[in-house]
Image (cartoon, rainbow, N blue to C red):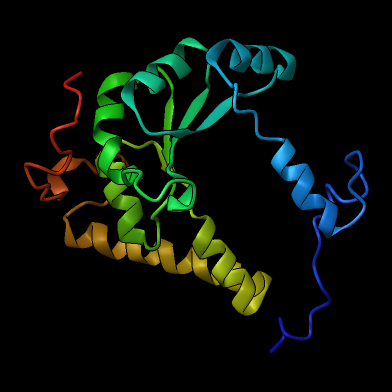
Length: 196
């Protein structure tokens, strides 16, 4: 009910600040103009050079792209299919994670996004080699349900689920979580998996 009475939200960091974006109607046009269909690795390198800070590349679903991101100087990569909303047939992030880990583990941080709904999901990703996960949907659901308190509660639930699951797996420290806690089907990665 609190959300129903909330004033309409807007993207205040963009509306009124980006050129020709004065309201939500013009925001959609502006957002579509931001996508560059000609994006290639040399252009990514130019963006990195202009940025000058920590550089994280999101949307990696292929070991070769992971290698190119490392070559490009990525401080971290995010294995992500963007929640499956960009391309219906894209593989799940967790399914491609093992081949990406084999390709670049130790050369850059590997984060996983998409499909994290519980503490068990976080542990599965860590067990398969991710250094960290992102939990945007759980965060947003908590925010929508209870505001700031809901975000805190969603984080507490995930932490408790992780703690409980680790105990059931006989692990007390997240650093000891590895693939041994999982039963991974032999064909999990499919015939398309690269043997790096």
